[in-house]
Length: 233
Image (cartoon, rainbow, N blue to C red; front, side):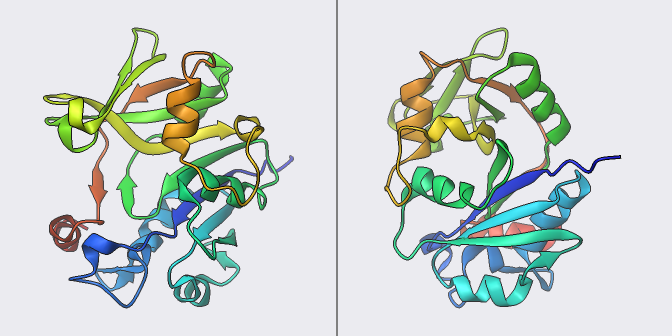
């Protein structure tokens, strides 16, 4: 039986500005929750879905992450894609893709835990033969995040910025399954936004698909939610 490699990129290079008042000596994904770095919970979840290789996209205080995890964790290979200056979400993903061997890679944020079914994400990606499938979640107030609109088949048909969004609706959950070819027009080391320069510019000409998950979600990037994690985990 051939072992098929499953790869994920975790974006773990943010400065964590909003969390500085609570945690200021480690990068956001390393903020302790119940005595363990938040990132361990995320990696445990990926391991449970059969991922074999995780690339950590690092920046601020990257050595804290590297010294803790080294080259492996819970049977998964760990690699690092360091940014010496911020490249934006798009540039960061492209930089990390250089460490990936497969054409299709899952990408997620290192400061959020969204308990989604990765198998369902993979099925959607395969069935629609798309270059990008993403997971959305429903919130009561989209004005904090912006809104993503889909049709009855799950095809993305529009994006609404935060300033123009309001009320209940679906938002980007920050988890993607993508094909490397999405980045063919960009160069390694180039600074750009995955959301603005790829998703919002290409969705009309390149069909992207999404599904809505109501799985548990927490973002430790803000102090109140970080404190909530200490109780809920």
